[in-house]
Image 1 (spheres, one colour):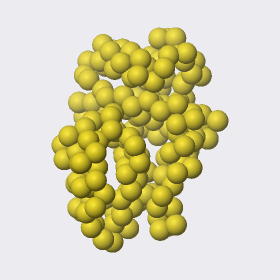
Image 2 (cartoon, rainbow, N blue to C red):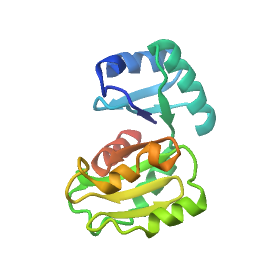
Image 3 (cartoon, rainbow, N blue to C red):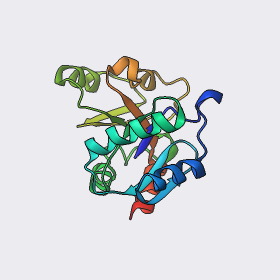
Image 4 (tube, rainbow, N blue to C red):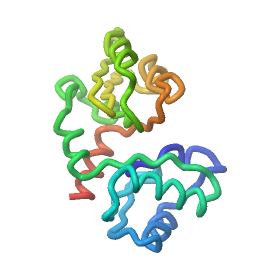
Length: 172
């Protein structure tokens, strides 16, 4: 699962050790985290949508602020990495991002976004994931601005390819 918007400022700090303990005490199994940006692997019998809602409620109650949670199963994460539409171009995997969406973009919005020219940056839309390659980095990227939640109109969070590979290794 991916948590959006934690550890970005002083008021939304979450220690990963405390997060692991919180989730473990809530009954989730084999809870593991990767770096400080809200990357969690855990075991549960709940389906993705129910798990998202349950975790958002539990985290809001325990942390005192809302946290958007994005759940992808092991099989879904494997499929995201197997798809890899920009892999032949994205030589620096830290600049190759996958933006995870809470829901599919409306078809007309997805088509407009996919048709835009962001050269030398690249974009591929695939269901609830947007793959983007930012050879000059994300900081000043016009494409990255278009992939913001505000611009998309859909709740979103992004992770780079290296992080996703590490999460898959943790989950596997």
